[in-house]
Image (cartoon, rainbow, N blue to C red):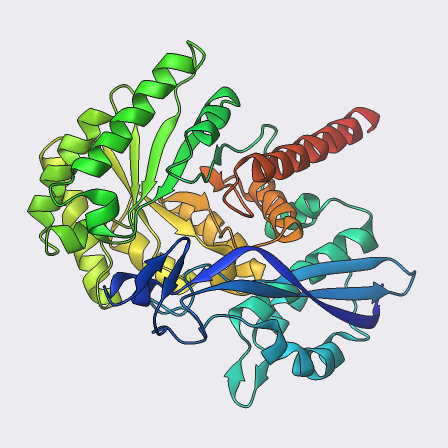
Length: 416
Protein backbone atom coordinates (compact mmCIF):
# COMPACT_ATOMS: atom_id res chain seq x y z
CA UNK A 1 0.00 0.00 0.00
CA UNK A 2 1.38 3.40 -0.99
CA UNK A 3 0.69 7.02 -0.07
CA UNK A 4 -1.32 8.61 -2.87
CA UNK A 5 -1.53 12.14 -1.50
CA UNK A 6 -0.81 14.28 1.57
CA UNK A 7 -3.24 16.75 3.13
CA UNK A 8 -2.37 19.19 5.94
CA UNK A 9 -4.57 21.15 8.32
CA UNK A 10 -3.77 23.58 11.12
CA UNK A 11 -5.39 22.78 14.45
CA UNK A 12 -5.26 23.34 18.19
CA UNK A 13 -3.27 21.52 20.80
CA UNK A 14 -4.71 20.37 24.11
CA UNK A 15 -3.16 23.20 26.11
CA UNK A 16 -0.83 26.22 25.89
CA UNK A 17 2.80 27.23 25.58
CA UNK A 18 4.37 28.57 28.77
CA UNK A 19 7.71 30.37 28.82
CA UNK A 20 9.35 28.80 31.87
CA UNK A 21 12.39 31.09 31.80
CA UNK A 22 10.25 34.22 31.87
CA UNK A 23 7.95 32.84 34.58
CA UNK A 24 10.88 31.94 36.81
CA UNK A 25 12.80 35.16 36.16
CA UNK A 26 10.76 37.19 38.64
CA UNK A 27 10.30 39.92 36.05
CA UNK A 28 6.96 38.69 34.72
CA UNK A 29 3.86 40.09 36.40
CA UNK A 30 1.01 37.60 37.03
CA UNK A 31 -2.34 38.53 35.49
CA UNK A 32 -4.88 35.79 36.12
CA UNK A 33 -3.63 32.74 34.25
CA UNK A 34 -1.33 34.97 32.17
CA UNK A 35 1.94 36.81 32.78
CA UNK A 36 2.72 40.31 31.59
CA UNK A 37 6.23 40.97 30.34
CA UNK A 38 8.67 40.03 27.61
CA UNK A 39 9.17 36.35 26.65
CA UNK A 40 12.64 34.89 27.13
CA UNK A 41 12.56 31.43 25.52
CA UNK A 42 13.02 30.91 21.75
CA UNK A 43 9.88 30.75 19.64
CA UNK A 44 7.64 32.63 22.08
CA UNK A 45 5.79 35.84 21.23
CA UNK A 46 4.10 36.00 24.66
CA UNK A 47 4.88 34.36 27.98
CA UNK A 48 1.64 32.37 27.84
CA UNK A 49 0.19 31.68 24.41
CA UNK A 50 -2.17 29.22 22.71
CA UNK A 51 -0.33 26.42 20.90
CA UNK A 52 -1.13 25.11 17.44
CA UNK A 53 -0.58 21.82 15.63
CA UNK A 54 -0.37 20.57 12.05
CA UNK A 55 -2.42 17.48 11.29
CA UNK A 56 -0.67 15.37 8.65
CA UNK A 57 -3.08 13.22 6.63
CA UNK A 58 -1.80 10.47 4.34
CA UNK A 59 -4.31 9.43 1.67
CA UNK A 60 -3.66 5.79 0.82
CA UNK A 61 -4.25 4.08 -2.51
CA UNK A 62 -7.48 2.47 -1.32
CA UNK A 63 -8.88 5.79 -0.06
CA UNK A 64 -8.21 5.24 3.62
CA UNK A 65 -6.66 8.22 5.44
CA UNK A 66 -3.98 7.91 8.11
CA UNK A 67 -3.05 10.91 10.17
CA UNK A 68 -0.75 12.21 12.84
CA UNK A 69 -0.58 15.47 14.76
CA UNK A 70 2.57 17.63 14.89
CA UNK A 71 2.67 18.97 18.45
CA UNK A 72 5.32 20.09 20.92
CA UNK A 73 5.53 20.45 24.69
CA UNK A 74 4.19 23.15 27.01
CA UNK A 75 7.61 24.31 28.21
CA UNK A 76 9.28 24.55 24.81
CA UNK A 77 12.65 26.15 24.18
CA UNK A 78 14.34 25.25 27.49
CA UNK A 79 16.81 22.58 28.68
CA UNK A 80 17.81 21.56 25.16
CA UNK A 81 14.34 21.55 23.59
CA UNK A 82 13.37 22.97 20.20
CA UNK A 83 11.76 26.45 20.10
CA UNK A 84 8.00 26.78 20.61
CA UNK A 85 6.18 25.34 17.59
CA UNK A 86 3.90 27.60 15.55
CA UNK A 87 2.00 25.82 12.76
CA UNK A 88 1.98 28.87 10.47
CA UNK A 89 5.78 29.03 10.45
CA UNK A 90 6.09 25.45 9.18
CA UNK A 91 3.03 24.84 7.01
CA UNK A 92 4.48 25.92 3.64
CA UNK A 93 7.42 23.53 3.56
CA UNK A 94 5.42 20.73 5.18
CA UNK A 95 2.86 20.95 2.36
CA UNK A 96 5.61 20.88 -0.26
CA UNK A 97 8.97 19.37 0.73
CA UNK A 98 7.77 17.01 3.45
CA UNK A 99 4.68 15.98 1.49
CA UNK A 100 6.83 15.22 -1.58
CA UNK A 101 8.97 12.88 0.53
CA UNK A 102 5.85 11.00 1.65
CA UNK A 103 3.95 10.65 -1.66
CA UNK A 104 4.45 7.27 -3.29
CA UNK A 105 5.95 5.77 -0.14
CA UNK A 106 5.16 2.11 0.59
CA UNK A 107 3.68 1.99 4.10
CA UNK A 108 3.59 -1.77 4.56
CA UNK A 109 6.31 -1.38 7.19
CA UNK A 110 6.58 1.37 9.78
CA UNK A 111 10.06 1.28 11.27
CA UNK A 112 12.15 1.97 8.14
CA UNK A 113 9.86 4.79 7.05
CA UNK A 114 9.95 6.42 10.49
CA UNK A 115 13.74 6.23 10.71
CA UNK A 116 14.18 7.69 7.24
CA UNK A 117 11.78 10.59 7.80
CA UNK A 118 13.34 11.32 11.19
CA UNK A 119 16.63 11.96 9.33
CA UNK A 120 14.94 14.27 6.79
CA UNK A 121 16.81 17.57 6.69
CA UNK A 122 16.02 21.01 5.34
CA UNK A 123 18.74 23.58 4.88
CA UNK A 124 21.17 21.25 6.62
CA UNK A 125 18.99 20.99 9.72
CA UNK A 126 16.65 18.27 10.93
CA UNK A 127 12.98 19.13 11.06
CA UNK A 128 11.44 20.51 14.24
CA UNK A 129 10.70 17.70 16.70
CA UNK A 130 6.97 18.45 16.40
CA UNK A 131 7.02 17.75 12.64
CA UNK A 132 9.00 14.53 13.07
CA UNK A 133 6.57 13.48 15.81
CA UNK A 134 3.45 14.04 13.69
CA UNK A 135 4.83 12.49 10.51
CA UNK A 136 5.81 9.30 12.35
CA UNK A 137 2.35 9.03 13.92
CA UNK A 138 0.81 9.20 10.45
CA UNK A 139 3.21 6.54 9.17
CA UNK A 140 2.34 4.16 12.04
CA UNK A 141 -1.37 4.72 11.48
CA UNK A 142 -0.89 4.10 7.76
CA UNK A 143 0.90 0.81 8.34
CA UNK A 144 -1.85 -0.33 10.69
CA UNK A 145 -4.54 0.55 8.16
CA UNK A 146 -2.72 -1.11 5.27
CA UNK A 147 -2.17 -4.34 7.23
CA UNK A 148 -5.56 -4.29 8.97
CA UNK A 149 -3.85 -4.41 12.36
CA UNK A 150 -3.98 -2.32 15.50
CA UNK A 151 -1.05 0.05 15.93
CA UNK A 152 0.03 -1.96 18.98
CA UNK A 153 0.31 -5.06 16.79
CA UNK A 154 2.44 -3.23 14.25
CA UNK A 155 4.87 -2.10 16.96
CA UNK A 156 5.05 -5.52 18.63
CA UNK A 157 5.68 -7.30 15.34
CA UNK A 158 8.37 -4.91 14.11
CA UNK A 159 10.19 -4.51 17.45
CA UNK A 160 9.73 -8.01 18.85
CA UNK A 161 7.93 -6.79 21.96
CA UNK A 162 5.04 -8.41 23.83
CA UNK A 163 1.70 -6.63 24.01
CA UNK A 164 0.37 -6.20 27.53
CA UNK A 165 -2.74 -8.17 28.43
CA UNK A 166 -3.67 -5.59 31.08
CA UNK A 167 -4.15 -1.81 30.95
CA UNK A 168 -1.05 0.29 31.67
CA UNK A 169 -1.32 2.40 34.89
CA UNK A 170 -2.00 6.08 34.24
CA UNK A 171 -0.55 9.12 36.02
CA UNK A 172 -3.44 11.60 36.12
CA UNK A 173 -2.46 15.22 35.42
CA UNK A 174 -4.51 17.60 37.54
CA UNK A 175 -4.54 21.27 38.47
CA UNK A 176 -3.09 21.26 41.97
CA UNK A 177 -5.69 23.75 43.27
CA UNK A 178 -8.75 21.86 41.98
CA UNK A 179 -10.03 19.77 44.90
CA UNK A 180 -12.98 18.46 42.90
CA UNK A 181 -10.67 17.14 40.22
CA UNK A 182 -8.56 15.36 42.82
CA UNK A 183 -11.66 13.70 44.22
CA UNK A 184 -12.70 12.46 40.78
CA UNK A 185 -9.37 10.80 39.96
CA UNK A 186 -9.35 9.15 43.40
CA UNK A 187 -12.83 7.77 42.78
CA UNK A 188 -11.67 6.55 39.35
CA UNK A 189 -8.82 4.66 41.05
CA UNK A 190 -6.00 6.02 38.90
CA UNK A 191 -2.61 4.43 39.52
CA UNK A 192 -0.73 7.67 40.16
CA UNK A 193 -1.86 11.21 41.00
CA UNK A 194 -2.08 14.18 40.82
CA UNK A 195 0.99 15.34 38.81
CA UNK A 196 0.56 18.78 40.36
CA UNK A 197 2.71 21.52 38.84
CA UNK A 198 4.95 23.50 41.22
CA UNK A 199 6.91 26.14 39.33
CA UNK A 200 7.47 29.11 41.68
CA UNK A 201 9.19 28.66 45.03
CA UNK A 202 7.48 31.39 47.05
CA UNK A 203 3.97 30.65 45.74
CA UNK A 204 4.00 26.87 45.34
CA UNK A 205 6.72 25.42 47.59
CA UNK A 206 7.02 27.93 50.44
CA UNK A 207 10.26 29.43 51.68
CA UNK A 208 10.49 26.62 54.25
CA UNK A 209 8.96 24.01 51.94
CA UNK A 210 5.77 24.22 53.99
CA UNK A 211 3.33 24.71 51.10
CA UNK A 212 4.44 21.61 49.21
CA UNK A 213 4.44 19.61 52.44
CA UNK A 214 0.89 20.73 53.15
CA UNK A 215 -0.19 19.75 49.64
CA UNK A 216 1.25 16.23 49.85
CA UNK A 217 -0.22 15.76 53.32
CA UNK A 218 -3.64 16.87 52.05
CA UNK A 219 -3.56 14.52 49.05
CA UNK A 220 -2.67 11.56 51.26
CA UNK A 221 -5.45 12.43 53.70
CA UNK A 222 -8.02 12.73 50.92
CA UNK A 223 -7.07 9.37 49.40
CA UNK A 224 -7.52 7.74 52.79
CA UNK A 225 -10.82 9.54 53.41
CA UNK A 226 -12.69 8.85 50.16
CA UNK A 227 -10.71 6.13 48.37
CA UNK A 228 -11.68 2.48 48.35
CA UNK A 229 -10.11 0.50 51.23
CA UNK A 230 -7.90 -1.49 48.81
CA UNK A 231 -6.88 1.56 46.76
CA UNK A 232 -3.21 2.52 47.16
CA UNK A 233 -1.99 4.90 44.44
CA UNK A 234 1.38 6.58 44.21
CA UNK A 235 1.51 10.33 44.85
CA UNK A 236 3.38 12.29 42.19
CA UNK A 237 4.45 15.94 42.14
CA UNK A 238 6.29 17.80 39.35
CA UNK A 239 8.61 20.40 40.85
CA UNK A 240 10.21 22.07 37.80
CA UNK A 241 13.50 22.57 39.61
CA UNK A 242 12.05 24.49 42.56
CA UNK A 243 13.85 22.46 45.25
CA UNK A 244 17.12 23.26 43.53
CA UNK A 245 16.26 26.94 43.70
CA UNK A 246 15.10 26.80 47.32
CA UNK A 247 18.12 24.86 48.55
CA UNK A 248 20.70 26.38 46.18
CA UNK A 249 21.28 23.03 44.43
CA UNK A 250 22.65 21.49 47.64
CA UNK A 251 21.99 17.77 47.37
CA UNK A 252 22.16 17.08 51.12
CA UNK A 253 19.56 19.75 51.92
CA UNK A 254 17.23 18.57 49.16
CA UNK A 255 17.53 14.96 50.31
CA UNK A 256 16.80 15.94 53.91
CA UNK A 257 13.70 17.84 52.82
CA UNK A 258 12.50 14.92 50.67
CA UNK A 259 12.85 12.70 53.72
CA UNK A 260 10.42 14.96 55.55
CA UNK A 261 8.14 15.15 52.52
CA UNK A 262 8.00 11.36 52.32
CA UNK A 263 6.59 11.23 55.83
CA UNK A 264 3.76 13.51 54.69
CA UNK A 265 2.68 10.99 52.02
CA UNK A 266 2.12 8.36 54.71
CA UNK A 267 1.13 4.97 53.35
CA UNK A 268 1.48 6.09 49.74
CA UNK A 269 4.71 5.94 47.76
CA UNK A 270 6.00 9.36 46.68
CA UNK A 271 7.43 10.18 43.24
CA UNK A 272 9.13 13.53 42.62
CA UNK A 273 9.78 14.81 39.11
CA UNK A 274 12.49 17.38 38.31
CA UNK A 275 13.42 18.44 41.85
CA UNK A 276 16.34 20.34 40.27
CA UNK A 277 17.01 21.87 36.86
CA UNK A 278 20.72 22.51 36.35
CA UNK A 279 22.28 24.84 33.80
CA UNK A 280 23.83 21.98 31.84
CA UNK A 281 23.06 18.34 31.19
CA UNK A 282 26.35 17.27 32.77
CA UNK A 283 25.49 19.06 36.00
CA UNK A 284 21.95 17.69 35.93
CA UNK A 285 23.19 14.11 35.75
CA UNK A 286 25.76 14.75 38.47
CA UNK A 287 23.22 16.32 40.84
CA UNK A 288 20.56 13.68 40.21
CA UNK A 289 23.06 10.86 40.79
CA UNK A 290 24.20 12.50 44.02
CA UNK A 291 20.62 12.99 45.20
CA UNK A 292 19.69 9.34 44.59
CA UNK A 293 22.79 8.18 46.44
CA UNK A 294 22.03 10.46 49.38
CA UNK A 295 18.40 9.32 49.55
CA UNK A 296 19.51 5.68 49.67
CA UNK A 297 22.02 6.45 52.42
CA UNK A 298 19.36 8.05 54.61
CA UNK A 299 16.79 5.34 53.85
CA UNK A 300 14.27 7.55 52.05
CA UNK A 301 12.15 5.67 49.49
CA UNK A 302 11.25 8.61 47.23
CA UNK A 303 11.29 7.89 43.50
CA UNK A 304 13.12 10.49 41.41
CA UNK A 305 11.95 11.16 37.84
CA UNK A 306 14.12 12.88 35.23
CA UNK A 307 12.53 15.19 32.66
CA UNK A 308 14.49 18.35 31.75
CA UNK A 309 17.84 17.65 30.03
CA UNK A 310 16.61 14.10 29.37
CA UNK A 311 14.90 14.79 26.05
CA UNK A 312 16.23 12.33 23.46
CA UNK A 313 17.09 8.64 23.26
CA UNK A 314 20.84 9.37 23.70
CA UNK A 315 19.97 11.57 26.71
CA UNK A 316 17.94 8.77 28.27
CA UNK A 317 20.85 6.37 27.82
CA UNK A 318 23.16 8.82 29.59
CA UNK A 319 20.83 9.11 32.59
CA UNK A 320 20.38 5.35 32.69
CA UNK A 321 24.11 4.59 32.52
CA UNK A 322 24.77 7.09 35.34
CA UNK A 323 21.89 5.68 37.42
CA UNK A 324 20.79 9.29 37.74
CA UNK A 325 17.08 8.66 38.33
CA UNK A 326 14.57 5.97 39.22
CA UNK A 327 12.39 6.80 36.21
CA UNK A 328 12.66 8.88 33.08
CA UNK A 329 9.73 10.83 31.71
CA UNK A 330 9.92 9.87 28.06
CA UNK A 331 8.37 13.05 26.70
CA UNK A 332 7.08 11.87 23.34
CA UNK A 333 7.22 15.14 21.32
CA UNK A 334 10.78 15.83 22.46
CA UNK A 335 12.03 12.59 20.91
CA UNK A 336 10.78 13.48 17.44
CA UNK A 337 9.78 10.36 15.54
CA UNK A 338 7.88 7.91 17.71
CA UNK A 339 10.28 5.10 16.84
CA UNK A 340 12.69 6.86 19.22
CA UNK A 341 10.08 6.69 21.99
CA UNK A 342 9.48 3.01 21.32
CA UNK A 343 13.20 2.30 21.48
CA UNK A 344 13.55 4.44 24.63
CA UNK A 345 10.89 2.49 26.55
CA UNK A 346 12.34 -0.85 25.44
CA UNK A 347 15.85 0.34 26.37
CA UNK A 348 14.73 1.36 29.85
CA UNK A 349 13.04 -1.99 30.41
CA UNK A 350 16.12 -3.88 29.27
CA UNK A 351 18.48 -1.84 31.46
CA UNK A 352 16.62 -1.62 34.77
CA UNK A 353 15.45 1.99 34.40
CA UNK A 354 11.86 2.86 35.25
CA UNK A 355 9.95 4.27 32.28
CA UNK A 356 7.09 6.75 32.23
CA UNK A 357 5.62 6.95 28.74
CA UNK A 358 4.99 10.64 29.05
CA UNK A 359 4.33 13.57 26.82
CA UNK A 360 2.57 16.81 27.45
CA UNK A 361 -0.83 18.37 28.01
CA UNK A 362 -0.06 20.22 24.77
CA UNK A 363 -0.78 17.15 22.60
CA UNK A 364 -4.02 16.05 20.91
CA UNK A 365 -6.57 13.28 21.20
CA UNK A 366 -5.01 11.45 18.26
CA UNK A 367 -1.39 11.63 19.41
CA UNK A 368 -2.68 10.38 22.78
CA UNK A 369 -4.34 7.34 21.22
CA UNK A 370 -1.16 6.50 19.35
CA UNK A 371 0.86 6.86 22.56
CA UNK A 372 -1.58 4.45 24.20
CA UNK A 373 -0.81 1.83 21.55
CA UNK A 374 2.90 2.38 22.18
CA UNK A 375 2.23 1.82 25.85
CA UNK A 376 0.42 -1.47 25.30
CA UNK A 377 3.12 -2.69 22.91
CA UNK A 378 6.13 -1.63 25.02
CA UNK A 379 4.75 -1.89 28.58
CA UNK A 380 6.24 1.11 30.42
CA UNK A 381 5.78 1.34 34.18
CA UNK A 382 3.08 3.96 33.70
CA UNK A 383 1.74 6.51 31.22
CA UNK A 384 1.06 10.22 31.65
CA UNK A 385 -2.52 11.35 31.11
CA UNK A 386 -2.88 13.68 28.14
CA UNK A 387 -3.95 15.90 26.43
CA UNK A 388 -4.90 18.85 28.61
CA UNK A 389 -4.88 19.15 32.38
CA UNK A 390 -8.52 18.30 32.93
CA UNK A 391 -7.69 14.67 33.82
CA UNK A 392 -11.23 13.36 33.16
CA UNK A 393 -11.10 13.71 29.39
CA UNK A 394 -7.57 12.33 29.09
CA UNK A 395 -8.39 9.36 31.32
CA UNK A 396 -11.43 8.65 29.17
CA UNK A 397 -9.42 8.74 25.93
CA UNK A 398 -6.60 6.54 27.21
CA UNK A 399 -8.67 4.08 29.23
CA UNK A 400 -11.16 3.52 26.42
CA UNK A 401 -8.46 3.15 23.75
CA UNK A 402 -6.72 0.52 25.87
CA UNK A 403 -10.00 -1.27 26.58
CA UNK A 404 -11.00 -1.36 22.91
CA UNK A 405 -7.58 -2.56 21.77
CA UNK A 406 -7.32 -5.26 24.42
CA UNK A 407 -10.84 -6.48 23.60
CA UNK A 408 -10.00 -6.65 19.88
CA UNK A 409 -6.83 -8.61 20.53
CA UNK A 410 -8.61 -10.99 22.90
CA UNK A 411 -11.34 -11.62 20.31
CA UNK A 412 -8.71 -12.35 17.67
CA UNK A 413 -6.98 -14.84 19.94
CA UNK A 414 -10.28 -16.61 20.57
CA UNK A 415 -11.12 -16.83 16.88
CA UNK A 416 -7.64 -18.10 16.06
